[in-house]
Image 1: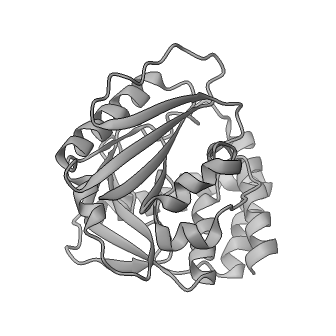
Image 2: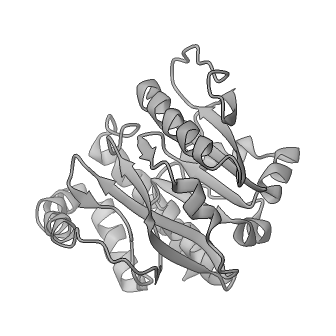
Length: 274
């Protein structure tokens, strides 16, 4: 019997959280003969609401009221001390946003991954509201020149705004144009940070990990750790996840704050991996 541990991070998004857990519970019901699913709800919300976890019949769900340490930072805090044992014992370890809905065969498909060199399973993520495919996030490793260029943009908000209005729009258009999904699995550099699905081969090598940035840059951080440990990130289009309302937790951030977080993340990546 496989073990799957999910940490989902919530910030003022209780309706999205409810929908996410319902889809997880349904997928767990379809895979109950092959895996057990444990979910830890890490609630960073500024105003906590009463939230019941005992209504989900097919998942072992626990609620934690947390301080807001960011996305990956909250997962780190939740895994301090003996809780790392749960991650190390899991066959698959997932960190997720809550603005997603997973398909009913998600856990069946994850448990069918056999390649012992896979550290990061990147699913198909379709954003219905944007009509774009969110994965793969990056096919190839970013060059140092590209990272320094991105850092320049983030450090100069006016330049970043111009970038968003031009190049970024073209990127989104390209993602829409390429919306037909390949049926083959494919090795990539990085998946989307909306949901991280890691194998025990990866987590057992890096736990405990530390990412000091509040938001953004997590994809590059894990991509570099995958690379450093001689593992692979594979895009699996048969694992289907829908991004219902992208950026539900960060939509209130102004662009200057986002730029600051992004710049800090890029500096960290450059200093530690390049």
